[in-house]
Length: 225
Image (spheres, rainbow, N blue to C red):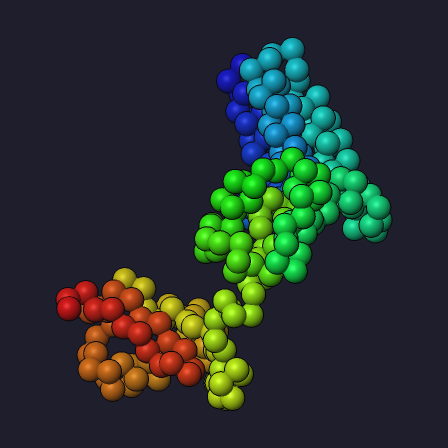
């Protein structure tokens, strides 16, 4: 009995990992309702089979394999068919266009104005006066385009040439040098020691956190201020 339960748990865990991989590298917030149904129903299958001794491990494997193949097939079909994609995944809706709320789109998505205002506030917009366009994405999040007068000032608006952003590398984490990050940055341990000396740091052990980027240099947090 215990061996049977153990095998079912192992199969269930491996299957969940495989299904998540089939769905691609998505965060939970990026999943559509259809994606979540995949996982919920799979969880139901496994829950029913886990403690039911009448269901054998082979039956569990068959059900899981069939479910996984169906998911894979549907995902491939969705990628090839725009009509099927809209049917199963839904499509984005423009709730605000040219600064005006679309009542028709609100009703179509079964939303109230207060729900729209809540989503806008979560994006940092506390008045519809500041919104040029707002789109409800298929995963339920809201993408907002602010009006020109409410948009942040950019270097281009001021005719200023700004340096391009460069990636940041975590070189020291809790007193330990991260060799992989050094390689990604194209640097060596000798270079790191030399640069730390310039920053007044004798030993990496005294550093809680140290990041480096090509255009901003080091940001160091020592253990003792």
